[in-house]
Length: 175
Image (cartoon, rainbow, N blue to C red; front, side, top):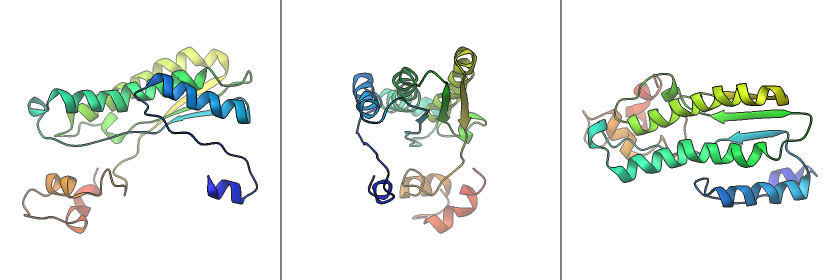
């Protein structure tokens, strides 16, 4: 926000847990009331942890992943599409390469991201007549705290006692 304001432009910010539809709707409406209708909706929040084989993932971890990565994306779309202007717009859903290929040890994440891709395809059909295009973006491993952490390094390099980012770099470059 500070950088946008430094350019002389207007911006409004809000914080919402995307699992809470009412909070997301309130944040979007606050922005629209300040700046006017939306042109673009971007659902970019996501979480990932890799607890191990599918049959070992407990319900809490499974549900949290689905709630944030899929339901939260749907909440963002639901709140945002209602505020797109009459001339159409764009919806961008940030998915993952895990929506294109399976990720061992992360079936909850991969399932949610596959579902985001399915959601985008349905939305494209539904929103096309309103001149709203829908696209997904499928980034691979990115240098963010979600990827660059000791738990991920240990999962990627189980052959080492305390692997570092450098140790995991080759494996990450293939994700």
